[in-house]
Length: 382
Image (tube, rainbow, N blue to C red; front, side, top):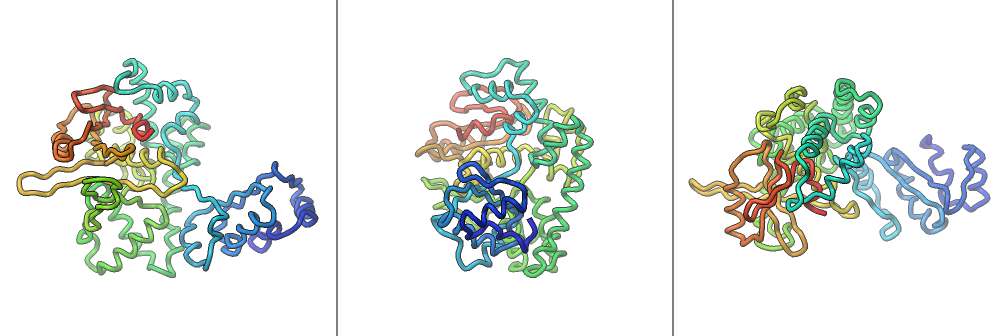
């Protein structure tokens, strides 16, 4: 809808709504019509007017969507508190990808499985095959649609290349706040340091610390980078004991990540061990994203990790999951093997009832460790 006409249905009575329907040749019926305002960030006045839909025409279903909404909201004096419901959205999850790829029955089997009730080996193998494709394609709707249409990984990677180019060119939207070259450099460095504690000193030395932090804040606000906070994990909520100096970042999609970093697609598809693929970062990224996607969309959920730095005794747990009143440590393994020293250390120190390991293994239970396959990471928070 052109910006100068984006208010044709705002703060109007039924007679004018009929006229609006005539203009667009669409009948507006209370309780049946869905008005979808896309790219609403381009018209900040339309965001302010959303409250009047609720007040003057509550029978009409209205959805507004857009990118970089946080920037538009920051410029508004008010935003209809109590009248507008917010949903936090991400690219498609693995389960949603499976449904789109017409693998519903396989996805249902994954959801019903558990460490105490593993999948048959041949079904597990099939699920891993889909997982490898998803790591390459990612969850961006356009990329998933291209795969469904063509069944071609090559076509998807071409599309992702265009998406990453567009994503970087969109940095010009921040130009009023931060020079594009600076935010581009910080973004590239954050991607390179992904899943590791972010070290500001590794960014170009020409930038001051405050300038780097400003770029990071903007990228997080835009939803391109997702923070993982360090928590002491002595109790709940996990966010009560964070250490702001220890922070990691995730990119919002595995498909974009493999494209930005130039990962070998065939290596991911053919390998039985992701440990060799960029040192397993893509597996850790996938699990973090799945945990967020499986959480409630009605709140802005956060990710946490635990780390202990001591002489001759460093330890790190990739993610911490809060289930009811319990804190469950979760460790990501890119293959089917690997020690769990950090996991056991955390469990002993915090008196954890059990820990979780995600890997390319089938569902299983080892002593106090519950094993979830990588493709079932979303099951952990359900």
